[in-house]
Length: 155
Length: 155
Image 1 (cartoon, rainbow over the protein chains, first blue to last red):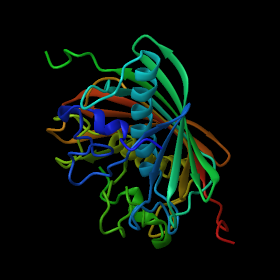
Image 2: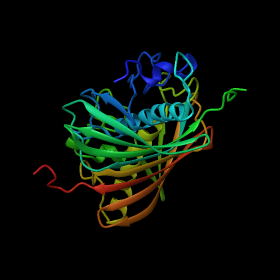
Image 3: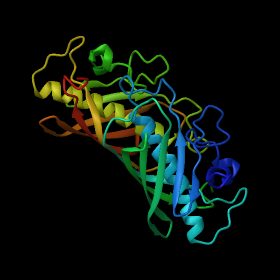
């Protein structure tokens, strides 16, 4: 596993996300790592992130998929376009569409593993499919349509 | 607007959700009100819930849509089936699928309004479409496929 998360290659302005920004002091600090052809992220939910007792809150699962999706899009886009990632040149994607299917309840008692795979790259659009595992059982599937933020988006 | 939120009719066991449970002390306490044929919810995001500076985090928007979706499903299902809501008999729905389209950035500087409409009821399944408004501008659209939790789901 690479030591540096994709999110650690975002420039400071793009590193304040509640879900995955290293500069958001209250946030979840999700980290996405490119490993071969897939992306991996781990997260241990806090006890208060319940849906019903003992089950992880669906909003948290959607949030993790969202951030792991845009992080994965950045990693796959950089790889596809021969961009050598360094601090702080990672392309920054935002979510156009997020689709989450809750296949079964996700227990709150352990670390979750998220895996991402590239489905499609077309210009500025990257589609990533995500799977969430608890105790090595697939509990949630998601898809993120991520859009590359233009360099001059603030202008 | 009715004084009692749908979530306040959930029995205690189903009122611990991080997004909308009255008994989750750290949660968002989202409340869904049935007003005529639509459901309304309001939420003011905290300053730390950023995506990039000044813009609301997509995971929070997905979370609000998720909880307002299941709350709306409960309200629409009760109405359709002639259930007079009282403490604590509200049908409890869980999310099967959540779909969120981010149409434009949602500014972090004001209260958000969520509106829900019934799209379909078929047996235990209720489909709700949700719109999120900031400064009266539609910024996010969502759809929740909600499933009625069976009474004996713990057994």
